[in-house]
Length: 201
Image (cartoon, helix red, strand yellow):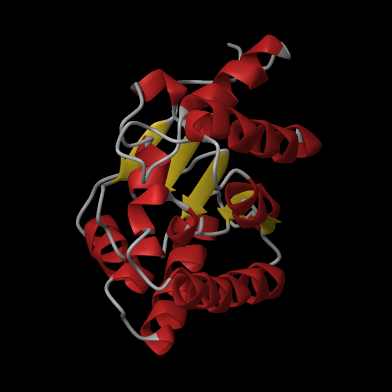
């Protein structure tokens, strides 16, 4: 029997691909890319909801029956912590918990956990009446925690934030709500995720 790899994607609106068709979200596009490389993958399992903070995702995982083990797990969370002005301390505590959980889901294979940095929603038209500099600095602080935790736990870290800033005035990069990203940006994230997966296979 051929082994099909399983992939669990944890997060918020960015993981779902809010405002784009499901198949354009980065977890689905990543699996498509991996299949093109003749790797066998099930459709991704997605546990994510728009608006979720680290705490809400953690809370949900405590009450959800998932499979015993996954070959790969990605985590992209934290924008709503920043959006709601929640503390750095709680973010760090939750993030540690979520990373340990993700590593547990891979059967203690941290190199198969992929943590993505938090996009800067301040660099979208949606934020035009906000203090975009303050938002950017806050996101950087949260991402510093992400990078440190990734290193500490030996999980794979992907910085997607600089890219989201680079596409600041490109409407093709955004979904119709001018806050979330289009399939084009999800494709870039998907490539990065697929690369990280291929390194392990």
